[in-house]
Image (cartoon, rainbow, N blue to C red; front, side):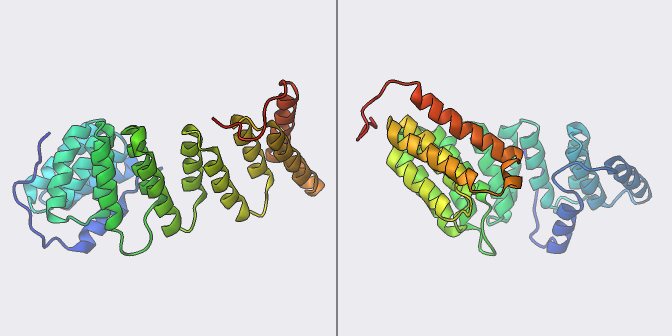
Length: 295
């Protein structure tokens, strides 16, 4: 589906755009069919109101009724070709219905008039990523992040940019980690970004770097047992069995120091089992070299 917007006016009130976006959330919810029925009645009474078609189209999109949503968006544009927000909605629809190539047309049309719209740039980035245009996706995520001037960016923008660079090949690993570190600094060290960075460090056999990152998480956490177990797992991968065994033992000690009521918690019981299994696994293996065992 090519761009449906023949001409665009910048004078669309911001409140109208915000109202349309807020009226329908990103997740389907109870009562959506009733909302559609109510809009059916309003459209029958006021068939020339483009925003009513737009709102109903958004509800159809949330309900994954792609054909009906697309039809309503088309009606909205016929009634008001200057209703630029429809192009963003069409782009989102195309992306969600696995038509990423078609999404790009509408998203770029919208961005031609509103080049700093963060959400639309993020949608465009995801479209590039779905199409396997990984470096272009990464560049688009960087552009997305640059538009966030009010508040902090969403962590997933950093994560998705990192995944795009990973998909582009191993030669981009340093750029990937630098981007994650940027996010860690801007967002005050969210664990999700650091965990992905740790995963990448391990994938590239950078065990000491992974351990350093893990220590940074542990230093900010009041509970250490989870991170001690993860430390043991990384040390096992690095072929440092004695250090790994020590990490698992420290995890068991941390668990033993918890109140009895917490030890009986299922999550803690799983950690106890993991630490115990780690020691048993190491005990079952023949002794190996310890210092500098990492490849």
